[in-house]
Length: 173
Figure 1: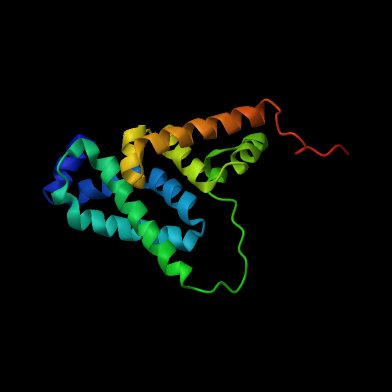
Figure 2 (figure 1 turned 30 degrees about the vertical axis):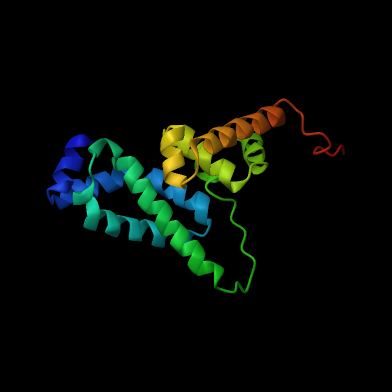
């Protein structure tokens, strides 16, 4: 990966394409967790690739490439959210979100359903993408302590859910 980054910074387009392909799935999952709508996700990813291509030479530390790329993506997603907030939706659209891409079990889907979008995003960045709490705090522009609390509360909610502490959520037939 480091070699691809170095080559990309020197203008090697093939190396850049390989970098983007290597990060495509994780970028998709982050974008999908923020945007929900596939068309918006595609727009955010396309804009991210263009911005990364134009600015990769400014990347100071190659070891932060994934963080840098994810930050670009999140900024593009936030731009789209701001743009969409000014748009009137004519119909309600339900999309179960990114979890269906990598979570197969119904019970896990139900467990993830009790979490807020912010909690799902933090869990995804931490467990799936491998970012630490400091990196996540930089990506989300929040204090590291906030991220740690969000991770802890998410884990606690999931633990309670899976231990059967749903208290009234189950209706007996």
